[in-house]
Image 1 (tube, one colour):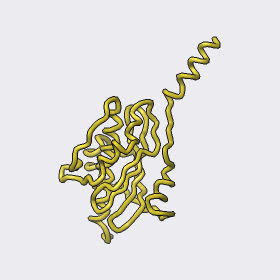
Image 2 (spheres, rainbow, N blue to C red):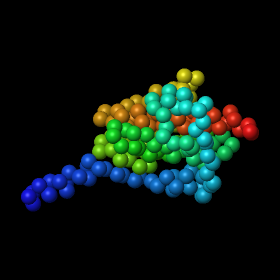
Image 3 (cartoon, rainbow, N blue to C red):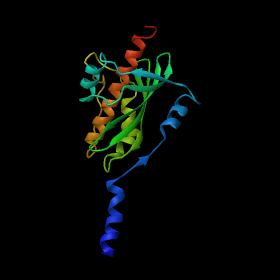
Image 4 (cartoon, rainbow, N blue to C red):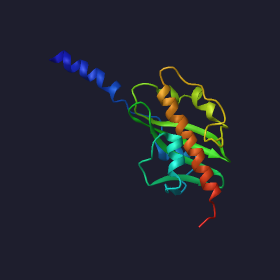
Length: 171
């Protein structure tokens, strides 16, 4: 019985991995060099078809918070990798990705998506009219679903920023 408990204790952290690389609030503070007030994007029925096209499913939220203004926005978004959510911070500046960072990683595999060799590929990426990234993102062997999750979140952040900019000043 003692050996069973030791094996169980040794196995548990890999199954229920939770790596916090940076708290979301700290990411936003770092991006804007201090505190900034959040804004809200309401997920209206008009947005839902594009969200479904990008993500492959509906978002289970009524609104999404973002920070920034004047063409630059920071988003904290989540998507399931294989089984658990990955929380990412994404900064869009003038329609291009300025920065992406895996903030909280809950999967047991694929955490390589947090390293600059992967995330730097997104810098300067924009969104095509077909809601795809306009540059190719190389995958990581063993992290395919995590790569897909961050790619989807990048596309969503770009789409949301486009939507905000297109509707700026609208009632």
